[in-house]
Structure formats: structure tokens, C-alpha cells
Image (cartoon, rainbow, N blue to C red; front, side, top):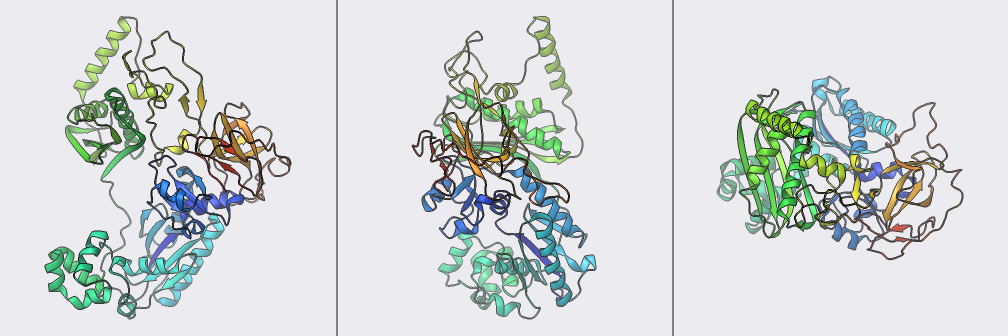
Length: 552
């Protein structure tokens, strides 16, 4: 292990929530919770103000709402988060060629490999400069840990939160680790922690005193030896710049269990298409198709099929996923579905037989005068109605079926203007009329009004959407309520959190919105009514209404 604290660990502070607060002046200093807003959603990130109420990451959203009923609950904007993450990673790569990202908001950096630090003083100076650069470029804060190993650097950054820097001097590691809980060590989760507690071991110091032989007896050779070394502050893991992608997958959790087998098939086809899109975007193909099904009783089944060669053909992946589904009993209902591809490669070996069969079927349809037919998943996404035959439930929309997918991370940004069917009739025939589609407005996402300029969705329900008009550089803005089909209101891209020199953001925001309609629509919390819309600084709240909205 090295003798200088030249391994740096950066962890952005409450990243998603902090980005939302930076983008929305009215939320600064207030409790903000980002995550899936449906009944089965979970918290992705909570601001430090929300954490005071006991809200934390991975908590069920329903529990978070009970703990902090007046917090702002927002749908993630992963496009914005990725953009900020790339800005931060560029700053890290300027320090060293060895940067190991762990997630969008966290990374290790080997400062010694970059030649920018070789002792505690130079490492501290680099860390302080990095924190200042991150604030200047992104407007956000990050905490920095510096130590002689990855394990200790991560522990240091946790102790530095929020917005701080902690350096662990070589030679002081054992003294620092001794009183800490065993849970601070990598690889010690709830199960291992409980096992050690029953053996009378709760701190890292007690873990070191137990000795290697005892830990091997309790946990097995590999785990026992590894934990004993870490308890002695020994961690020889190197910073690895590149990690090979093992698999690509997508999954959806549904607000209400899906019982209709036709609907399940359509969801699997839709997920297969999304998975292939991600696969192609990453420049990969894969041989093994994996289907994941979580049933009504929380039992999770996984099925896989390995093809003759790697593919990125959506038809091949759809067909394989459909075959896997046939071996799964979904009678009691399905709460989660997922499709993945593993065994990745950088080339494809096309399934010529499948292509020839698909071409023959397409030619036959054209000759019959029916024209080309879109895939079921594409048809469902384009129309908002589940495709299928005219039988009961075959033509029901996701909303009509009561099993709309909970907002999935990574897809929300592209669903701001997604169309959902209102009042579609189950089993509608080709000649039946379908009610007009209604635009969805996820809470927290960016919009632009032709008159009032840029703003963000505060909530929606009952055919109304409430928008607060403000920008990162403006004072807290005022709110207005519109019909969801207002032609002057459109989704927009996020504004930069830090203004570019010479560019004035905001347009007609603060000055133009002097008066507020003060429209209170519905007023019933929990059924999509808009409570007290237009009251600046008061209970500006929009009840869920399709799982969206908040009360400030």
C-alpha cells in the first residue's frame, strides 16, 4: 500500500436533489425528494433538508411521503444529471488518466498516476482546487476524501459530507477505523453485519482483535481473509480506469399488478425494444437474452436463452424474450418485468433465418394489400393503446388496465411529451373511435410557454398542469395553471445550472409573471386535484394525479 494519501474519492452531495435545487430557486433550502412517484416508487435521492425527517435513498416513496408530507417530490431528469456528471468527470480526467467512475456522482482518482500530487500537502491542494472547480463549472458541491487506499478514501469522503474535504494521514488509519462500525467496510452488508453482531463483533477494532482464523471460521476463507485485511487498513485495490460492460438491461415496476397475459406479452416486447436501443447506443451486441419476472407475491424468476451468435436485432431479442415468457406462470399477476442482454460483443452475427422469415412475412402482407405491420411494442408506444386482437382486454390501454409502469429511471426525460390514452375502450375494433390522447407532464420537468418563457412542472391532474416560471439565475418565480393540452405550453430541454458568459437566461420569466391566476382546481389531495395553485410561498401543492405532484 502506498505511503502518501494520493487516492482521491469524490462524492457529489445529494446529487439529484442538489441539481434540482440549483435549477429551481424556489426549492433551495427546502426538502426535495427525487424518485419514482408511483405507489411502488422508491427514493433515488433526498436533499439534506429532507434527510432531517428521516427520508433516505432506496426508501419506499409512500414511507417518504408519510415522513415528509410537505417535501417537493420530483421525477428524475437523468439527461440533466448525465450532462452534469460528464462535466465533473472531465475535471477529474484533467487530474489523472486513472479515473474510476462508480456512478454518475462518484469516482476514484489516482493523483499519483497523474503526477499532480506525491504527498499530503499537494494532495490536499489538489482536492481543494477540485472542489472549487466543480462549484464554478456546475454550481454544485462535492465532498472529497484523500487517503492511501480506495477503502479509506471513500470513508474519508463520507466523513467530509456535505461540501467538505477529509485527508487521512498514513499511519493513523488503524486509530481512525477502530471505533467505527463494521458496516463501513466494503462487503459488509446487513446480513454479514448481523452475523458478526451475533458473534459479538460490532466495530472494526473488534474485527481486528478477533483474528483471521476466527473470521475465516465465521465467514469463509475468501470473505474472512478479506475483511481481516481491511480491518488492519490494508487495501491493495488499484484505481481502474475502464470497466467492461457485462450486460445491458431494462425493467419496469408497475403501479398495479398486470394479470392480462396479452398485456404481459406486449410489455415484454416493449422492454425488448428498449433494451436493444440501449445495446446499440453502447455499441454492443449480445448472445444471451434474459427475462426477469417479479410476481404478485414478490417471488422473482429469471429465465435465459443463449443464441448461436451475438445480435442487436430487435426482432430476434423480442422473439427470444417471448419464448422465455412462455415458461413463466403469471396467473396471479406481475409487478415487475425486465429484459436484458449479456454475453456482449462488439460485432453481430445476424440470424439470417429469422431475417428471411421476417422478410417473407412482410412480403406476404404487402401482397395481401395489408402493408407493413409495426411491432406490437412499437404500436403500443405510438398509440398508447395495447395492441392485440379484439378479445376482452386485448385492446385496453395501460391506463385503462390500471397497470401503468412506474416511472423508469433513464426513460423519463424522453416521456415528457408522451401520449397516454384517456378512456380507451377495451377490445376496441378497428372502426371504433378512441378518445383524444392527453399529454403527460412529469413533476419537475422543464417546459416553455410562448408568453411566460421557461419554467418547470409543479404538478398535474384533472386535465390541468401547474407550472412555476423561474430559471437557475432568476429569483423564485410565480406559478400559473394551464390546461394539459394548452398549445402554447411545450416540453423543453433543461437550462444550464451555471449561466454561460454573455448569455442571459430566463427570457420572460420573473418580470412577465407578475400576477398569478390563483386557480385552485379540485382541491382534493390524493386524487389529482391542484390544491392552492398560485399561492407564492404557501402550500403550493399538487396532489399526485397519475403519481405526480407535491406540496411545498
